[in-house]
Image (cartoon, rainbow, N blue to C red; front, side, top):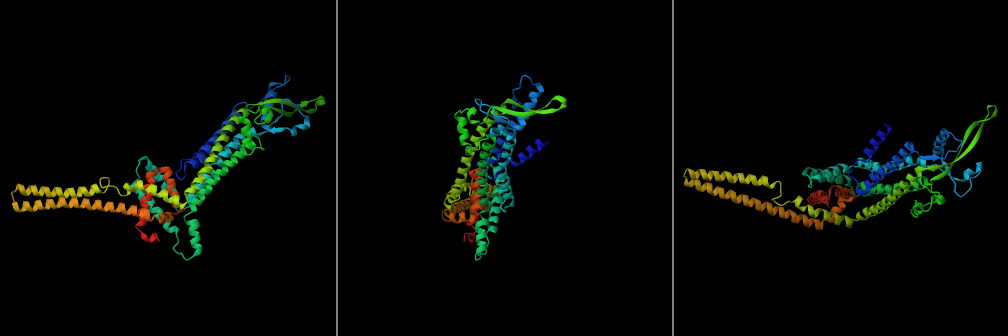
Length: 455
């Protein structure tokens, strides 16, 4: 039950989210799953296999051998060079004691859980924000399957973002405190926390590297494990380095009955084979290289995100997003969903006029037939004029959109703020260029139609 409960908790914590980018998922899903899987694998080997096998003396019973293996696994063993002599009874404290292998499964599992904490923090920040970013990104990602954003999604997302941006800006421009609060926390609240979450991801990788090197590899003299990996990669013998040794020495005491029913504590020394170290070493090498790559990717991702926050970069990004979506916001008449309805309306009028004309000709009423023919031609002309007017209106809107895109984009970037840009950037990362472009283009068109917001 405990394992199932832990698995359910992990599933809920690391379920697919759309308010993050791919690098964030590498941290809170891939790294977490790998570390937890490694911990469970080693735990299963320790509990179900023979992690430690000790050499039994000729006069030992079989139960003594099992006792020695279990005791040495629990209490730990000592690494002593094979070409050296064993110390006296009080000299074992000077030897390197190995007890990390008992804790390795728990250490790796806790490190895996640690990688999910920034994700949990980010979820709480999104929940506490007035901008419902999670819903926008989730619904936008669902429309990715169809390839086209739904009208309902575009309407909801643009209206919500517009309303939030409006409420976040204080109207009292003469109050310095309110202006600073609005500038620092109004449009940068989510962005600042998102940067902190990425920094926490980097910190988690640093902690994991230090922990697995210090506790798992038992090498506290190596900075982030570089010296340890170098020794393992160059094939340096564990007999010299003492890193993940295979043969160790175990010392324990047993009670032996002496004369007159007295018991004496007798020290026993045996040599043990740490089979579990072979698995832990391979897992350590794989995990270490994965964490180093993840560390580099996290640093580059954070630097890139901060670089993209520059106003000029935001401007270029938004322009490149909106131009491909122009045909969606102002589609051609043949692709407009509203135009066929209007066209059917005019066709119905023309069809009725044509039937009226045919009926008058059938009854051979010249005057009425002439009037019906004139009405029929007027209906045809009205339909053509309506189509031409709609076409000219559509072209004018497209030209106005391009004009404002060239002249008001810098004001729109300032109006959108860092949080609005972050929402569009994450929508682009999860739903694609076209869906994010359609949303921001619609939001931009709403912005330019209300000049009072541009001041």
